[in-house]
Length: 270
Image (cartoon, rainbow, N blue to C red; front, top):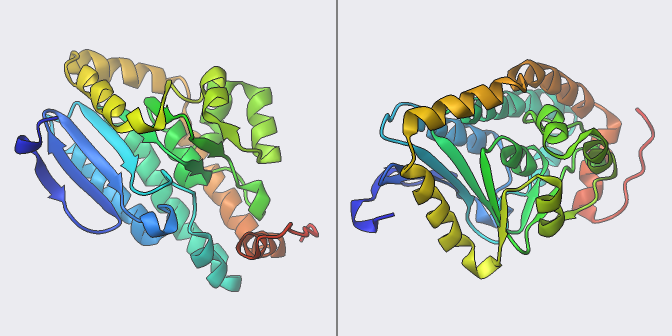
């Protein structure tokens, strides 16, 4: 991408957006919290994606995160601070996440996501699942994360992940919450390409340039036809209802507290 031609569309806030040479670059900009999602973050992400919808010259969207991690999921510290009001709070967060994911999937532009460090939960693994092409650094790690804090999958991952990696592997990943490394993620079909960490930025730029030179109408049509087979939008409301219901339980509060206290949670089923 030619830096001299770069236009800054959103220059401050939790999500940044710039453009050059048919490529819009969405940058998650909360590195101090590992790009953890809260309401402000999700609103900003949705705004950035919708701006890309309105720009006919955008052929590729490059999604990336600043700092050591692409996105470590929800902002656990903020979630835990809500106490018994967590259910209402997450209802709004999840609504914005749904809209952002739906907008990403329905973009005519090809969505290329580059991952370093952790991609966890709906804010991390969910965005990876909602991308068209994913390039990961060798040190990238993928973690569903929901059940470890008494929650359920969201961001469409309950539909997309089984489609990508197979039902059995998706079930095991989501129930066990084990960390999946970059090589295994490539082998199972979760990511498209793995490169050395120090080559990630350059490889992502090269990949976006390749799609930017492609036939935009044909690429958009192909993307639409492939995503139509998944019917992700039909799963998003059920995911949101489930997450909202679980977030009002004592188990969810215990799970969040345990993460903050770096201990094993004690779930009691209530």
